[in-house]
Image (cartoon, rainbow, N blue to C red):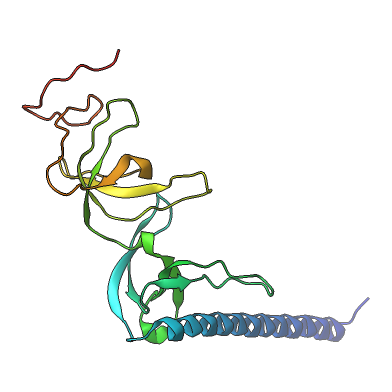
Length: 205
């Protein structure tokens, strides 16, 4: 049977080893963050010809639980990549910019695709993909997001002009405004608002 002295020494050694492991883990995490920061700052130096730094909003998270986040744009738009862990992994380039997630002095960065930057572009959007769907006035708040596969058209966040509702809809149901007057003046029977004084049309059965 171990004496109280031996038990105390064993417990003390276990606590020491645990403390050493925690210190090693903290050092490894610090080294990882430092490398990540350095790789982002390399991209910043390549794309910051005129040292852009401006406050902008980007969409972050999912379509359901996401939100607008204010960040600082550190570079012009160009080919950027997210810094991920693991050696030998080839970076995936996309069109976007490097942003600072908090105060730029904190040096916490991320690469954000240009389509997730908040914008306000007039457009026309359809309430559905059914035959006879007519584009209604709206404003694009993002570019094409959430393209999970090459076959996916992605989604665009828009705001309807009629009732100010903000929704995500399939990108193939959104079109930029045409120059001049639009030819169509029909009513979409699936629209969530009724357009008064619209010309009657014959709808398919």
